[in-house]
Image (tube, rainbow, N blue to C red; front, side, top):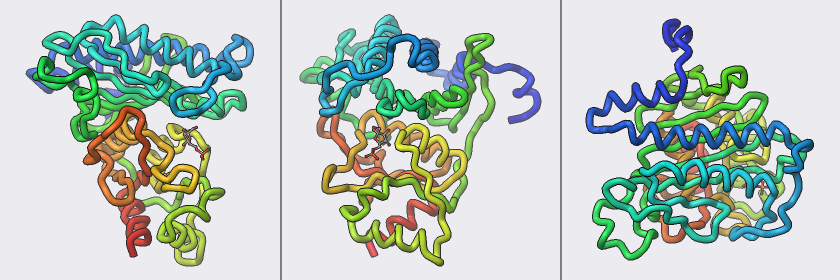
Length: 334
Ligand code: P6P
């Protein structure tokens, strides 16, 4: 980022407006929509930072559609995002990891033209032990012929290549927002003294290679044999790789985006289709990875080319530096 930009104190709102000007057909509606997301994540961050003293830790005593124990902060984050986005008149449909069904806040049409899909607080099982967690979001445009659509699903079950924007916020030692609208990946740090996300990196590029792999090795006996062969190679003389696994997808991806390497969640006995969700985890991160020069696959198909068939469907995910993803595939399909 050049010195001028650095000294300019560019907020995410200003950055989005500038990006929108580059698309003459775009209106301010999109930046208004994204401002709803940034507002929600600032509020979430204020609770995450008070976890332990704001009575937001622990279980909400219910399981979600994923069969996972819902944390209080999961529910709170979901409510905050739905409230902040619900006021944006351009939002037609909300899809959340925490909701069994989509929320049709307005009938898709000329005004309500976007679907927002999100994991409100990914990695929430780490909240109680103060490990970085994150919010992931993906934005699709509602199908133009809304009247011919039978309910919300056709608007939602679009391939990842159809995303108009995607991003995440990682609540870590600092709170960082990364987003793309298809013109590169840009990063902002939340400055608590002014309550604004301030630009600190533009057009982020993922290193083409990196001797770091990120996987839960406890499951490796049930990985496909080729993936096991890759791990044996990576740890052996040929590889000389390091293992880094936080167990919080946004944190593991954020490191991979900046340092290079590869994150793997292959099929396992416990999760034969993989554990991570296609619509609001794999697709948005795959959009970001490719915009930064990286790659993302399920082991056979480019993530962004997968045709979703259900709201909460899972997928295997191999994502990271292009050379590293290709190397995993070379072992997997040797
Ligand atoms: P495992 C957190 O629960 C999560 O959904 C992702 O954030 C993370 O990458 C993954 O699960 C960790 O799964 O099976 O290694 O605990």
